[in-house]
Structures are given as structure tokens and as C-alpha cells.
Length: 231
Image (cartoon, rainbow, N blue to C red):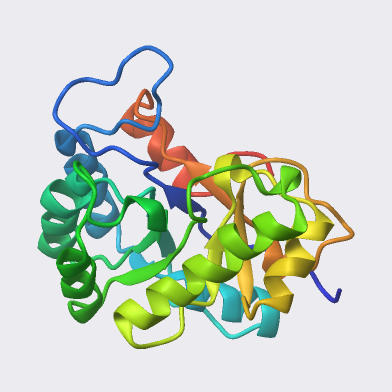
């Protein structure tokens, strides 16, 4: 599948919740706004530039250069605290981000609304599919691929008025069959979590993300951003 390019800064998912209480035991993806702000301030003060899914895809697939000190920030699942807490902090510190949306949640209580997603899209944030209801792709039937992969893409594209060709695998799990289905339904690339690369899958369908662990100290966060975590 060609040369595997190393992304010079990690792609992070501040997965799911950006909310005020301290993270519960085992909930590393619940990031208090104060911690997110501290991380964003460090990234800005350290000269990092935010990139989104298409930027990383173009680097992995086509070798298009990324800006100096790039970092991709992403948020999963469409929780409304991302709109109320993450969005203003990203704007304050000058970072874009990719939001991967479970389409079943749109307009549901505690999740972002149609209007909020349109607003974020118009503000320049990157909105992409994250299945219909977060079932792992390695268990899909042919009917599931339509419901979980094809239809969410169509839903967001109708809502936003443009293509949404990138996907985040629920729980970061994937296989070649899922990657092939993504390609069939018009996805250009997809994002996994930090695990072993499947050599049968083209690199653009297995782009690595890291959970920005809410238990990390700022020194640990900086170490990962600077490439100090062994690939």
C-alpha cells in the first residue's frame, strides 16, 4: 500500500465528555474543561497548529506536507458538552478540531442538535461520521454496513451540504472487511485507536489516534505530543 508515513504529531481524541466533574475511575476520556484548557494553552504556547481529518489523510495518502508542529484534535460521540465547553475553548486558543458524530444521537437530550452541528460546520469545525449507534465494525452484517456506515454519511452530508468522507471506528477496532466497506461507500480514510497496524489495510483506513488521557499530567501530555511515546 505504499510508504507508511509517520505523523509527526499524534492525532488525539478527547473522547466523548468535556465536563466539569473530575474523571471517574476508568473514565480516562472524561476531560474536565479546565484540563482541556491547560492542554490547549500548552499547545498554543508551544507553537502547535491544529489540523483536521482531511489534512492528515492527505499527508498519509499523498504525502502532502503538514504545517510545522501539527496536531489533530478530535471529539467523539456528539455529546452536547463538546459544543458548550470544547468549542469555545478551541476558538479561544485558535484550534480547529474534528467531531465524529453518532447520527442516532442528533437532536436527542444531552447531545448536539441539528442547528448546533450546522453552526459548528459554518464556524469551520470538521464534522464526520462515527456510525449510527457505536456498534463495533468487526461484528457487522451486510445490513449493518448500510445502517452504520452508508446511512450516517448520507445523513451528515444532507445536513451540512458537503461531503463527510472520514470515519472513526467505534472503540478504535477495525478489520479489512470494514475498511473495504468504507471505501465502497465513498469514505477516503478512517481513524483507529493506538493498537497494532493491520498490514492488510491501506494506511489511510487505519490512521492512529491516541486518547488524551484525563489522568495524564501535563508532562505526560507533552511527552506524547512531542513523540516520546513509542510507536
